[in-house]
Length: 260
Length: 228
Image (tube, rainbow over all chains, first blue to last red; front, side, top):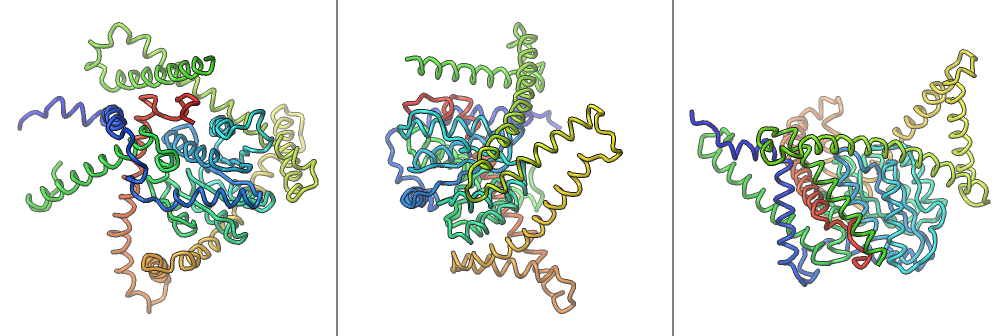
């Protein structure tokens, strides 16, 4: 039996490190390639297209916008989700013309949340300190029923005009979406968890599925760097599809057993 | 000028941290392969990598303290104003203060009533309230299914509701519905499984792209105010 190629073995053992490095190089190249490409060339994303209208409506009624990252936080495997969620919340806070309330159930998201709000405030041209109570922490992490209960009350007591919930949510999202529907508040939601995603799809005004929550900036603030991320994601997806089809074809030809 | 300097400093700090952690991980996984390339710096990289992880743990602990202070201050301020929901804020503030006080007294052995108040409050109040909220989830989910038809009365919406009804129906212990069981099993094993894997693969790819953006300093949090 021939010995396995050491290079392939290295790639296999270190895929989690090598892949991001390859993608990083690809991103750099994609940024140059995208250049001044128009945002219209990206695939249509109804939820991100609807968001500015929702924010405008809330501002017109003088109501605050509720943003939340749920249980996403800067620890463990959730860190990158937290960053993506912060990006989406920043874009929404930047475009909101009225007050914003940010809620989270992970304490590590508090500094990041303050940074998001501070930057958004600066981008909107407001100087000075933030209003107290703009960021609220409701414990206790993923699938937090405490967050769901408190957020439902907040949506009523603060007369929220629109809700954007992107991050880590479980089935507790049903309580919040129910509260939003009862008060006629528009809601956009997406989660990295399957049960939360199912609830989000069923109850949100416009669906956001899976990876769509990671690329809010490409639609809301289409710079070459932001669009390059979507282009890279699409390239990776097609490569994955090609790999899956090739493996399926090889498995079919070899009599049913998938190649190792 | 000053802001650009701090932005540069933040980018430099973030990239150095990321690269040192990455090198630390590589050294741990492939010590022989990288021994030649990183040999002179190996002890320093290992030490820095461990220190960075310790700093991270401390930051998490500090963020919890910030969270508790945030919770108390926001609700203390709200309970002082006569506005909708100020009663909830007052209850929350008092409960949190009492629990913190009781925990301190118990830890210092100053409260010797024989009853573990902290555990009692957690089990009799917190767990009960969360259980009742979890019970309410069912109604929220049923309402969600109804809302699908209200929002998206199309083929996909109908398919969603039909699937929910089929899976729930097959779970009922009624002999008349036993015919649905093989269909439910196939649904869960093939289309549901495939869809779930598709969503998770999409999320995994997006996560890799976000990670790579952080690594090369393309993430917004590492860029200057001009990008805003």
